[in-house]
Length: 422
Image 1 (cartoon, rainbow, N blue to C red):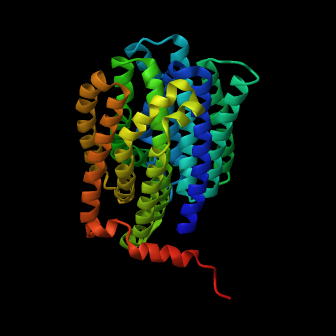
Image 2: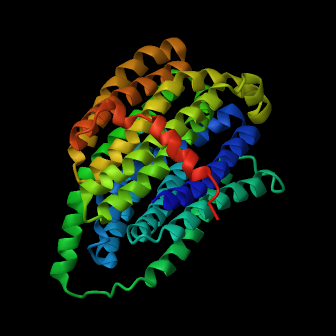
Image 3: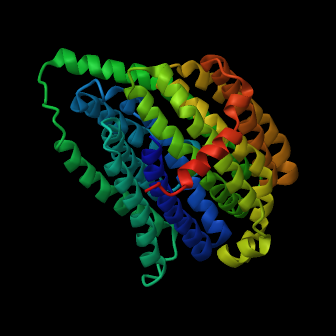
C-alpha cells in the first residue's frame, strides 16, 4: 500500500503544481478582479459537479468491483446531462448572469462530470496508473491551454478560461472512454440487472454524497459571502490564499483515497484498517510540516509571484492554517467511514461544520472581509474534523495517542531509509 500511496502522491504533487500554474496564470494576467470571476465560476461548476454525484461520484469506486461497469455508467451519464442543463439554468435564474456564462457553466460542468465518472470506474477496478495519468493530463492541458491563450494569443478574458476547460477535460474523457472499452465487462441486455444496478448506485450515492455536498458548502460558503458582502477583488485574493493552503491537502487526500480503495476491496476490513493506521499517522506528520512551510512564506513573495494585489493573501493563509491541518486528519477518518458505508457519520460531521461556517462567516465577513471568510472556514474544518476523529477512535477501538505520530513511526521511517544490507 505504501508504494501505491507514494505513486499516487507523486501524481497528485504534479497535478497540484499544474493547478498552481493555473492559479498563477489567472491571477497574473487577469488581476484580482478577474481571478475573482474565475473563482466564482469554478465554485459554481464544483457545486453542480457535486449535484451530479448524487447518482455517481465516489460511490462508483465502491460499487464497480462487484457490478458491471456499463450498468453503472449509463445512469451516471444520464443524471450528469440533467444536472448540467437544469443546474446551469437555475444558477442563471437565481443570480444575475449572462447567457454566455450560463451556457459555459452547463458545458464545462458536463465535460467535467463525464470525465470523473470514467476515472472513478477505472480507479474502482484498481487501474490506478490510468487514473493518475488522466488526472495529471487534465491539469497539464488546462495550464497549457491557458498559457497559450494568455501569452501568444493575448486573449486576456475569462472566456479563454471557459474554452481551456473544454480542451482540458474533453481529451482525457475520450482517452478514458477507450480504456473503459477495454475492460472485460460484457454488455448485459437483461433490463432487471441494469435497473438493480441503477437503484443501488442512486441509493449509495445519496448516502455517500450528502456529506460531499455539505462539505462543499463548508468549503465555499465563504466565497459567496465575500462575493455578496465584499467585492470581486477580495474574492480573487481569498481564492489565491485558499488555493495555496488547500494544496497541502494533496498529502492526506492521496493517502485517504488509496486507503479507501484498499478498504472497499479488502476481505478483512478490520485488518486493513489497522494496517492503514501508520500511513495515517505519517500523513498527519507530513501535513503539519507542509503547513509550517506555507505560513513561513512572506507577503512580499506572494506579491512578487502573483502580483502586487496578492500580498494580502498571507493573512488569509494564516487564518486558514489551523483548519487546514486538523481537516487533513479528518480526511483519514472520513475515508474509513465511506469505505465501511457508514455515510451517516460523514453527513453529521459535514452538517456540524456547516453549522459552524454560516454564522461565523456572516458575522466576520462584514467586519474582516476575506480574512473573516478564512476564519469561518477554519471554524468549519475544526468542528467537522473533531467529530470525525472522535467517532473514528471509537469505531476502531483505539486510543487518541494511537492516531498521533510517535517514536515508533520515526524508527520505522529510519529503518525504511537505510540501504539494504548486502
